[in-house]
Image (cartoon, rainbow, N blue to C red; front, side, top):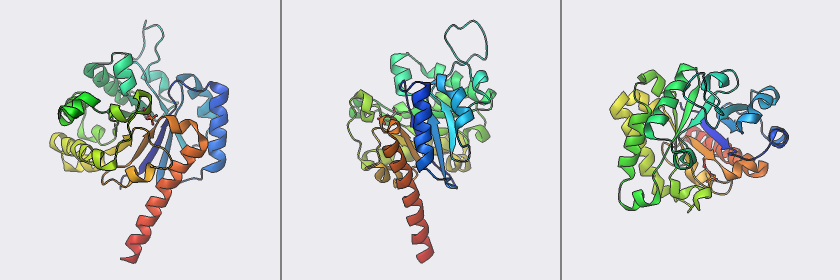
Length: 265
Ligand code: PGA
């Protein structure tokens, strides 16, 4: 059984104090959920204080980025090694990193390798832009991003990767068009199919695939109900405790209505 993940990417928002306040508000409203993993990705600066503040039964931390070298003269960078005891996950290959910071397929691959070298799990973001979708290139883009990023990993490691499908055209900061669930379900199937081809069906069934792009509390359920979708990576709405809590509630209600449905059968 793949556990649902609801992850909040706070991007370059909230200083240490504001981050702490948001965690406090979320903590008041979110219960311990056995079947939902809630992941918070604040700025690197807030990771250390939040690692001491969060209720670890409810929340896990993710870094938004890290550099692939473990140590050295790389001014301004934070390594995966430094994050080892602070976070569970690191977001790798977010489209903002690929576009604004020129992260190539190879850089993303080296970061994924660095994460495993340091016992951290990647939340690997993949997704096509508007032109690529229009030109029918979506599968090719996803194929290239996935094949390179997972290069050199064992099937056991791949099973632990979380893949976030985030079509660039649907991300709020890039002027996000709202993606209909029917526009993204084939990409989610394709991602798992790709993993099956490379690493076998058992690995594909273990990998979690999230959706990300303008998800909020009102529309989350539509995405969560897509066959094979194991959660959401949330940007803008994760900064609002009401909206983020609403997304967690949507996941909770969906899981429980499915359980009731099975019980009645
Ligand atoms: P958004 O961001 O929810 O604000 O569209 C998603 C993301 O960039 O991960």
